[in-house]
Image 1 (cartoon, one colour):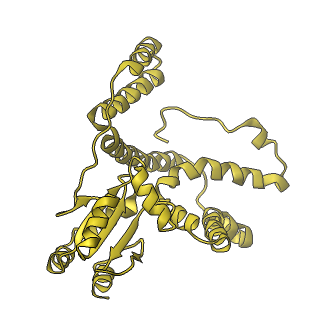
Image 2 (cartoon, rainbow, N blue to C red):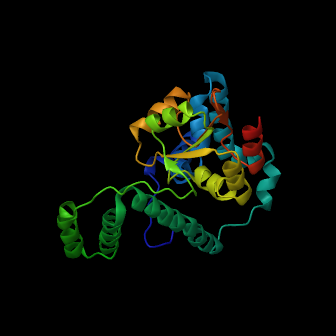
Image 3 (cartoon, rainbow, N blue to C red):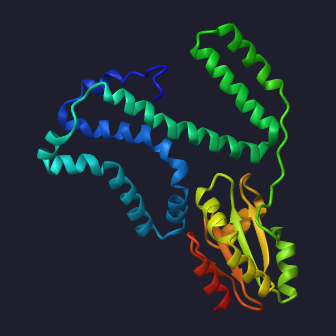
Length: 274
């Protein structure tokens, strides 16, 4: 998208008759979906936790969202005349749209750092260097990097707790706190989950929520599922959920309440006071 190199459309696409244009749409979805997948994890997790019929409805909504611009033009052909004509501006738009992709690469690099530490990030940098040499047609340097890559060590990084007063989740600790009749709030999260990060910044790190936890002596447990911890997977399965975010509140002596995936301070306050 930055214009450094170009990929050609498969030849058979251009030879398809108009009535088979659905295959062109299928190709567009296959190309576009990996770009959007990191940003619709919450929707996929919700669909996997739903019964079959609502889940298919959610996937249908995703499909309609991808097809909506073309559907509108198909039903209202006059709108096509209002579209700008192809020209050099398309190349500028293409380069502009490459910026979010680079930003996504930086974000996923941060996720990799959370998963594997500085050495994992170094491997990513070396992979980028390898790609750069390849694009610059420097095969000798690319081959050297490829030979050295498997011999670089890597070690997983431990999960970091960013929420004030949080403790790492474990079933034993949860049972201990429950035996003490303490209220417990569990945040199951992951570094690659954008919804989780937004909820933590806007709600769980907010001063009113922190004060509420302190006033009610709520124990805050955080389960980091970035590396697919089996203990957290077991809790997700027990809660009939396929992925994060998952927020559970255990009142003293009561059953767990599952909070919505999109949190607000008001939702947390209502749960704790209910």
